[in-house]
Image (tube, rainbow, N blue to C red; front, side, top):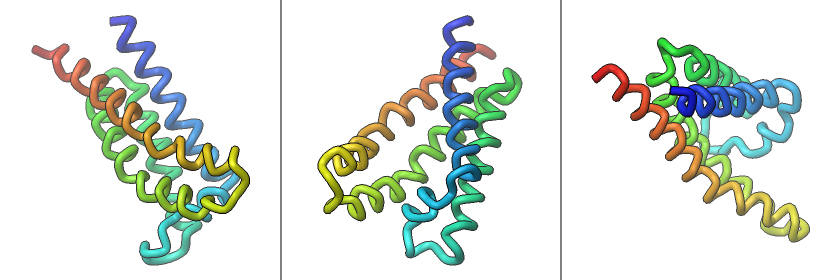
Length: 127
C-alpha cells in the first residue's frame, strides 16, 4: 500500500532527524531531561537520540515496520514528561517561545495516533 509506505517514510524521517539532532545540538535536549531521572542529562539525551534513530530505522524497513511503529508510539509517549518540563521551564520566556513550548504538549497526541495507525495497518496486512 503506497499510503502506508509514504506514511512510514515520513515517520521514519521524523524520528531519525530528531535522533540525529540529539547529537548535533545536545544542549537543548539536555535542558529538558527531567531532573528526577538518575545520571547525567547528556546520557539521557544520547540514549533518547539512539532510541529515535533505531525506532526510525525499524519503521523504515518493511519487515520491522509494524513493531517499529508500535515502538514509536511508546517513544512519543515516553518523551512527554520532557515536553512538560520544557513548557514549565519556559513559562517566563517571551510569548513566541512560550507558545512553541506549550504547542509541543498536544502535538504528542497526533504523533502517537500516527504511529499507532501505522502499526495497525502493518499488522492487519498479514491477516
